[in-house]
Length: 260
Image (tube, rainbow, N blue to C red; front, top):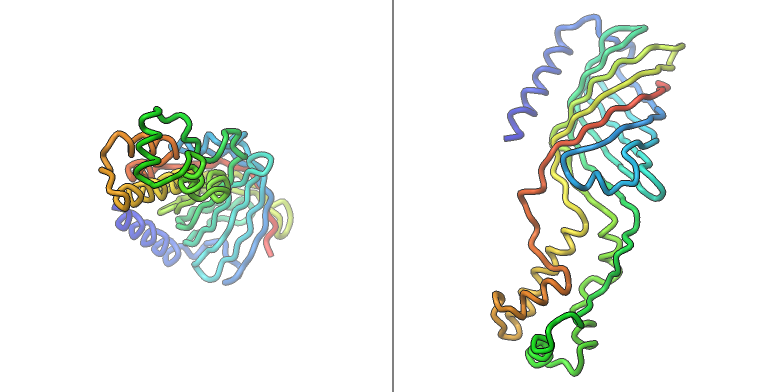
């Protein structure tokens, strides 16, 4: 489903490169750095976990012939980041006023604020009969011993919970900028991407779900039993919802760029 739009985008850009002698490309190789102010959002609830929708950051890139590689680092709040790497093609038209369009693909990493929710496994909320069934099935001497074994991933889960990662399968950009002086540009740009994104919480919950299944099977417990269901709830285990991974993101930003 994604392959065809990607190929079409590539063909359009190649055709533009081949047919537009007035493209603003003084050199076959160029690099740039820029400071940015961004308005970021998307269809996923993950974008609402940032304290702000507006971020400040930098972009750096390198263009070699028709291939463009650039990275973005945006601070979305205290200890909150949105990071991307992008590889693709773009074309520019004009000189003092320059228009650029491009298509890219690449990874995405999001770092959110620390969660205020308590971490760890608490089995004290299980009904007394379920607690006793768990102790018997697992051969535990106490509920604390069961919690220690089922406290899967521990501190690693806290770190994972602050993150989301994925891939922009296709990302389109349109920009217009004004040359203020040689090698210095002031501009605005918009980007729209189609992504696959998963949160660290979902990754940890999916791993715990598989671990609970293994625990049940190794102790001869029916995975569909009420006890196993209560355990899944207690440790936060659930399968990853694959239908929620894809979505769209958008970005509007103003920038000042220095080309090298």
